[in-house]
Length: 623
Image 1 (spheres, rainbow, N blue to C red):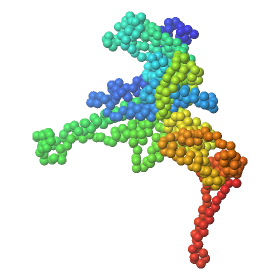
Image 2: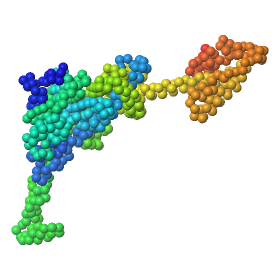
Image 3: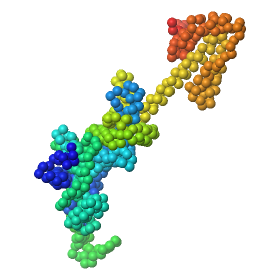
Image 4: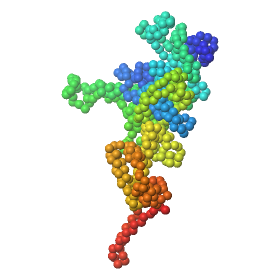
């Protein structure tokens, strides 16, 4: 498909590409007119711009005089939703070490995409967009300076997405404004046209702002200069199979209609501000009310310690105003409506009766907020998966043979890996995104549940380690555990070797070699050496001098191969495994048979009242 043959969802009566893009934008603006109006109202209220709502302000109070509930709530919800999930790449089969290492490499690459794009900071804006507008727009673009894909959180204002009936993104049109002189420098071939259209626009030369239209679909992206004579400035064909945009859409009962969290409470906030203004004006008028004086008062003194002489001083007063408590009750009602309309519990701001609400009750009051966060995380989870898949595909298509080195921190452990996108990604663009295996549970209950399911062999130890409620490097920790288990096995063998010393002495053999080796191991450990290094050093075979023929001990009783020599098949104190006879595997260092001695001591009185005590010692041996 050529660029000129892109099928835009507009009338085919406009062959010029720029005109088609502009006509499509105007159609989308008409379609989303109500949405744009709601968004503008929410933005004005959050910015405190009450000039657009003259009925909600007065000359004395041109700015809001109540707390901006919508803005503070949006920020709090965004801060709860912004923390990033965990990214873990896994293949169809994770049975081999090579496959696990490959997936660990892809996990580190995906983590680098996220960290290099500073998504932890950007999601503070992306989460705010999700609650405020009902959309969170992510744009994946190639960074040719670093030769890496970069994720950008884009403001949905002026953006018009178009979905099909399966809720798949078909196109995304973005309208924004740019300085005319900067555009003329960027596109000198269109400089005259740009400045001419800017001159025809309203405003001084310093305020020349040109309308820009960016249209994107699965085939490519077109940048159009709007105005009386639209012209295509740039057109780019996508290397990936789909457009580089991912949009997380807040669920709504109207399907394609996008609504923010605060669309229905904007005017409740304005009404609350109006009520506060009226209350202030009422108090001001009550304080500044005129004085009512009896007829015998001829002189009016004003100021502190002023004296008014009258035969009826009880009649001196200010003119009263009839004020009821209905205004204060209405203010509380409006605040409750704000909280109900925005689904924000009062307990988040500390508004609760602490004398009757327990800790469990406070958790129950904000359980609805937890459900909102979980629902939003479900939407963002799918969006994160699409974003990482786009990054993998873009990296593989644009820089397939470039050797790259990435650094970062994964699960609290620094890493540095080298990879080649074409060979290491190799068409696998999948990535698992998890906000937590036991989302909503505290860490203690989450760990208990994981251990119980692991005991029933529901999943592997590797999967359980990736779901625990704190960050660890699973692969690195698994290697450390294997090393520790091997060292414990070496120590078990050493214990069995030391336990054989009495048996050697009973058989008439010289136990000094075993004693000296055990002592050498202790001295090595005291010097800070590792267990495996000390044991390897002590037990390394040493070349022995060739014995003379007929020398004592060669082939004789008690010597190697003779009776009592302790070799397999003889009557020595060691069995073929190297442990003392009667001691099974894993019981080295324990009493005979692996069971401790049972010592019973009973004390009591006889029928005559004399004290009686009995002691019994029971030993068990495995047969």
